[in-house]
Picture 1: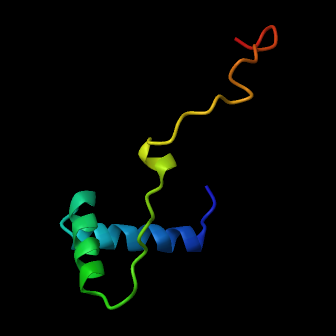
Picture 2 (picture 1 turned 120 degrees about the vertical axis):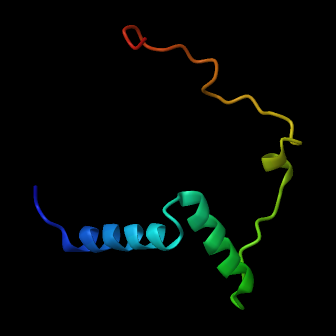
Picture 3 (picture 1 turned 90 degrees about the vertical axis):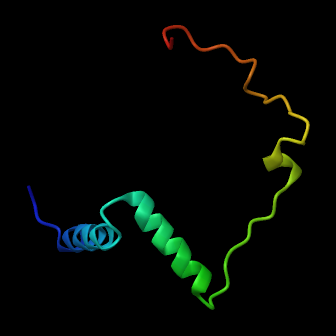
Length: 73
């Protein structure tokens, strides 16, 4: 197995962040969200559109009614 110093460092940082947050991914996400709330940096706010909320009428895809070639089952 080859050593990749960048990946090794990335894995070490990930392990340290998890350990600092109590060892669980949920705790790490909670900690990062709390830090984000306290930050003065602007936060991304997505716009909800009709398409992503399901309010848009479904369109039929041009590929929906195509059959598979023989042997591709």
